[in-house]
Amino acid sequence: MTLEIPRPSEGDIVDLILTDHRLFEDLLRELRDVTSDRRRVVATMAELLVAHGEAEESKVYPSLEKKDAIDDDEVEHGAKEHDEGYQTLLPLLESAAVDTEEFSDAIHEFSETLLHHLDEEERDILNPARTDVGDDDRARLGAAWATERNRLLDEGCGSVDDVRRLVREAEERS
Image (tube, rainbow, N blue to C red):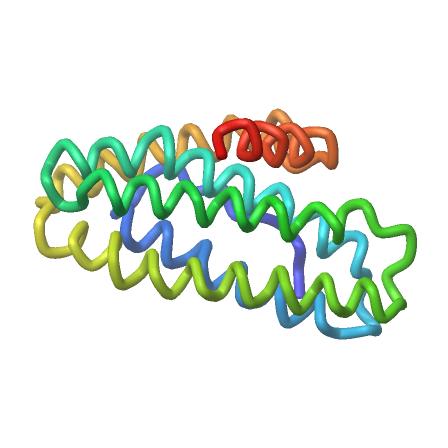
């Protein structure tokens, strides 16, 4: 499997987000494989997770809320689940070894957190985006999200320091 993160610049926001969701699933499978380069997989996962989630929170969720496709509770819940993803990702980034039971347990916790979020987001946010938002608006959202996601990727947004900062900010909000 290649660990390159695709960088689309446009497209329907639903399709773009779903493409990343499938990439998350592929990366999780690779992370579970003890013969893979787990450090590289974790680094790729971190970059993708932060860029994806932060772009959703800044570009997608507010627009869907304005269009009454989702409400404030769904926005808050999606952001809370992004925070939980960062919190469960951090032990993987900080782990000294990738071949320990502790690392395996951290993979399990991260995987459960991420897959739960993907499921809920697809049902509770992407479905309303499909039905309540027109094609042109979904394309505009797709371009805005992709631009922000790519900007964050260019900045190296998934560093351990960035993830620590995001976790700290989440704890301060709690």
